[in-house]
Length: 77
Image (cartoon, rainbow, N blue to C red):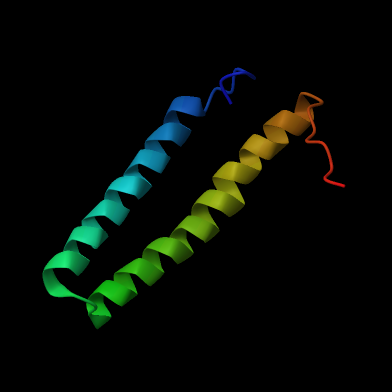
């Protein structure tokens, strides 16, 4: 992102930091309370939201940015 001057880099990094902070908080909750249904639901919600909102929207936007610049990833053999 930095190498290609992506305007959304700082916001993207912020979202990843928020995700890591939330995961850390959930880990602390697990250490304190063990495996609970509430914790399982929180983890499920976090991961589903990340997959739906972040990967399918934010990461796809970055892919479109690269494509518009004519940048593609090499195909694996």
